Image 1 (cartoon, rainbow, N blue to C red):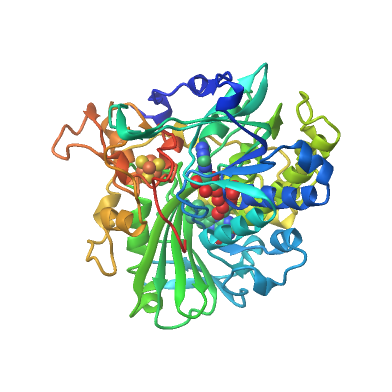
Image 2: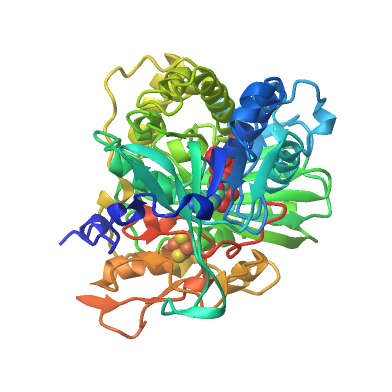
Length: 565
Ligand SMILES: Cc1cc2nc3c(=O)[nH]c(=O)nc-3n(C[C@H](O)[C@H](O)[C@H](O)COP(=O)(O)OP(=O)(O)OC[C@H]3O[C@@H](n4cnc5c(N)ncnc54)[C@H](O)[C@@H]3O)c2cc1C
Ligand code: SF4
């Protein structure tokens, strides 16, 4: 019998996370525009809005004491950010027209690149697909860039609220009024500990959801406003390491093939990146589509296996791992976007909406551009006094549809869904779509969400190399390298069914890069098993939301402490 993760939905009701306003006027924090998430999308929104309000003192005054606020669940901006990352620099330069590239933190321009098809001991260089051409793009650390962007936003008058997990949407008469933030200092059973502090209501004229992937409040909002009809979102999981290296790498590398298996029955889609971060560091990672079939596939361990290739050994020789992290990417492209990008009182930007070009492995420039379009649309709506009207934020949806963001996603819309049907079909559609600049095929290629693909217990785990603590790492030492600072005695923030078929439980055990799930290895090989959860290991990558469970934000300030990912 096929086991589909979607048949074992988590005990999670989106409607429990939509609440009416309850706090009195003197108990809530009123802000002009509230941005949830200090990633590139949220911070670009804050910066652009700050620039526009800086030239409009009258409107600034009308927005009150706190015209723009950014709530971020991480300890600081950038703490929860991880990306490859090679960035298309156009939007960030557009956002800061008075700055030179040297003023913006990055590790230089890409000057050389190679794409390889990998075999266990050898590699074949293949022509670089047009979407993966990177000459002139910049290598960055998204965590560092976000910290810098947050400083720029603060200089323009943004109020930063770090360690603030936004848990619930406040909706009144069909309009989003803001969010409720989480309590701090609760124990495992939800009891109040000595350091307890209750959450608060944040009210705003406009709320911008810039939560990235897989967006807790975004998921709640999309369901509440029924924005997902006919939409198929899917996710990829990326695991990354930053290494100090002895020799400069000098070029950007992408690979396909080994260690992934190309046979259609495994549905293993993905590849690696290796990017130079200056002369003495490299960013190295592996991305895997979460629609895979073999329960024993582990993105964490595939990256370790990939490091045993002679090419990678040569690059990392004499080096040392400096950082590790994991995060999902929304991969559905145009077909994964909600039916509109605004609702009364709120808009979605960046990965929250699903603006990633998976063929290029790029979302940072789309996040920034969408944030700028959001800021300009919100400013126009505020100026015309329409921001709180039912269709007042329509300008944002329209602005995106008319923008470079939409055009880029449109061209590649059929490629990722086609790879769900295997490497050969995917390759064919890739060729067709690329040659026709996206015009062919005209009919949408249909795909399924990750949780609707069946899973079986295969034997992938036999290939993973044993950890030595210096070059090959196990999951627990990787979690340590992420700087994870979650209290052990916090309430569990992961929602999933605890008694599930062995193949689903095994999927979760291997999928989670942070060793959050455990099952009794000597337990039954068939039937159902009990899943044990260690929530404090969680690095909030979001993969569980794609494959049958649900990640909710834990207490603000917990989770990883990324600094150079
Ligand atoms: C492995 C990997 C490799 C990638 N490689 C590249 C690349 O090379 N080039 C490229 O251009 N793109 C790449 N991307 C994609 C790119 O990183 C994203 O598209 C981009 O970071 C999206 O920005 P964002 O601001 O929308 O979301 P994010 O960067 O995810 O930021 C969202 C922020 O919101 C916060 N948040 C979320 N929920 C809440 C809440 N409820 N309350 C408070 N705070 C919240 C999070 O903590 C986070 O700080 C990669 C992504 C991954 C995962
Ligand atoms: S438990 Fe946390 S780290 Fe593990 S898969 Fe789920 S979200 Fe990712």
